[in-house]
Picture 1 (spheres, rainbow over the protein chains, first blue to last red):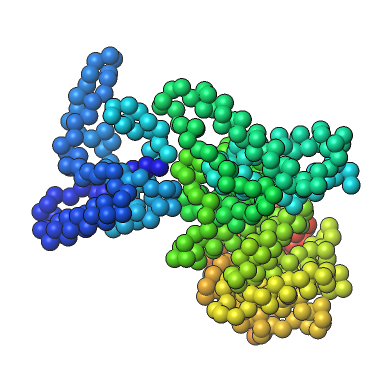
Picture 2 (tube, each protein chain N blue to C red):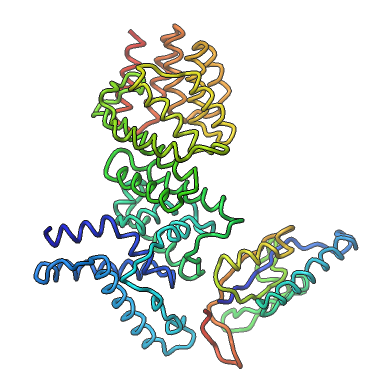
Length: 125
Length: 392
C-alpha cells in the first residue's frame, strides 16, 4: 500500500535559518532518504522550492488563469513529499515519525488511491 | 433450546468475535457487519426447520464468509474502471479455518482505539463492532441525534478500511500507550452506561479485555473498578441515596467478591489509575463487612490518584475525604483551590461541607447551584431537597 507523506512547514529565508541549521536539516534529510531506501520502502521523495516560486493554474469562466504564488496562501506550506510503499498505516506512522519535518512542522500521511505504472492508472494496495 | 434463543445466545457471546474474524484480513468492518447480519437472518429462517447446528458459531462464520465473497466477486465484476479501488486483489479469509475459530477481538479493540481514530468515536465504535449495538442505541446513550452518530460511525469504519489500520496487537514499544487508549475507551462504555443493560455489556467487555490481556494489571483493575461500582447500583432505587447513607445489606456481595478477585490480579508493580480507582471502590465496599469507612486509606489512595490522573472528580473527592479526616473547613479550603464553576459534584460537596460547618444559607445556595448543573432527575430532586432542609 502506498502512502504519501506530505511535509508541511513554515517557510523561512536561508539567512533567517543560518547555515548551520540548513546543513543540519540537509544531513537529516539525507539520512532519512538513505534509511527509507535501505529498508526497501522508498518510491520517491521530493523537497520543493519555496512557495513563492509556485505558479497556480485555474480555469475562470472557461479561460486559463495563471497566478503567481501557491494555491493556498497559508503560514505553513507544502514543502515536500515522500512516497513510501508499506504494509499498513502503523508502518506508515513509524516511517512518518522519523521524517525530519516532524521536528519543525507537520507530517501528513495520506494513503494513495491510485498511481501510474507505464502511464496506466493502477489501484493502490 | 429454541432456534431464536440459540441465535440470540450466539449473538450475545460471539458477535464481536465473529466481526473481528470477518474484518481482520481486509479491515472492512461495514462489510463484516452486513455479512454477519445476513448470516443471522439466514439462521433465523433455516434453524427452525433444520435444527440448530452443532457448531452455531462456525455455521454463522461460514455463511457470513460466503456472503462476503459474493460481495467481493460482484465488486470485482463491476470494477472495469481502473481508477476504482481494485477489489480483486484481496483473497481474504483463505487462511481461516472455521473449525478452529480463533479470537481477534483484542486486535479489533486496538483498531477501535487506534491513535488515528478520533478519541470521541472510539467508545461508540467498540459498542457497535464488539458488542453489536445499533447506532440508534449508541446515539441515545451519548445524547446525540441518531443520524449524526450513524454518520460518524460510518466515517470511522471507512477510515479504518481506507487508511488500512491493521488488525494487530501493537509492537512492544507502542504497547503501553495503545493499551491505555483501549482501557480508556472501554471505561467510556461504562461511564455512559448508567445502570441499564449497557452497564452489563461494559462489564462483560472489561472482563473480556482483561482475559485477553492477562498480564496487564490495569486491564484487571478496570474490570475490578466496574464490578465494584456496579455492586452498589442495586442499592439505588428511583431515589438518589448518597454513598454514606446507603444500606450495605443491599449491595451485591457477588459483584464485590468478583471485583476483589480482579483487583488481586491487578496488584504488584506501580499502581496505575484504574488500580487506584478500583482500590477506592474496594474501600467503600468494605463498609459492608466492617460497618465503617477507612477514611485515611481513602485519603492515601485519592492523593496518589491525583498525582497520576488529576481529574476534577478525584480532586473534589479528595477534598471531601480531607473534610472527614480534619474538618469541614479544611475540605472547603481544598475546594476553593479548584476552578470548576460548572462541575456539579464540586457544588454538591461544597453544600455538604458548608452545612456541616454551620453555614446553612450558603449551603442551600451551593445545593441549588449543584441541582441546576445535573440532568439526572433523581439526583436533582435530592439536591433540591438538601437545599430546602438547609433553609429551614
